[in-house]
Length: 212
Image (cartoon, rainbow, N blue to C red; front, side, top):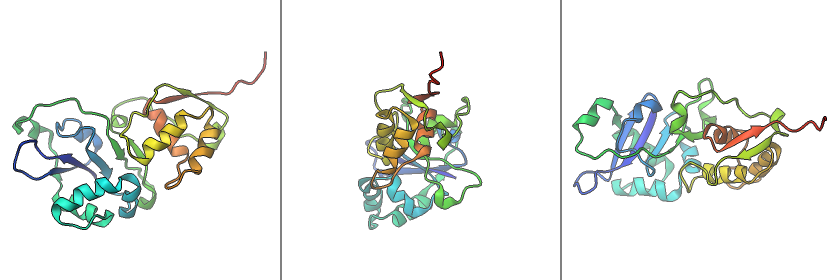
């Protein structure tokens, strides 16, 4: 189950946030409330790892309007208790102007993986029908990183944004992995490079063999 926290309707006397849940990320693509400020995550995530996914200000911003102490636990309780299923057909009933849905950072579900390790931040666009990107492994360490963008195409202020900046500044996979593992807090790794590939931020080029 995926959860989305969206800003309330501007100018209304309603709640400060709108909470939705859906079985897949694709179900959220038609939601006009989701934009670059929305928070989306996988409900299978270990609650304590939400501290690494969202900033303290983001957690506080959700908790305080509901008179809860700002913590990952209260953040999850609020979202879980208030989220309702998003149904695409509801879009026709909303008196809003639909704008462009911006790229949003999310935690995606990984079947057959222990929930405590599900901390992979990816993009909503990855749920679209696109060619499968193979996961980066240690066998790729000599591959060259070809930068395709100047800035990470994900939400600023997150650890994953910081990690992708490191990848864009690296020349090879091995160099990127070494730099990612030295980050504090929340060191990165091979998963971040796979995400950068899926996001279209980089390409990997096989190393030159030197043969003529």
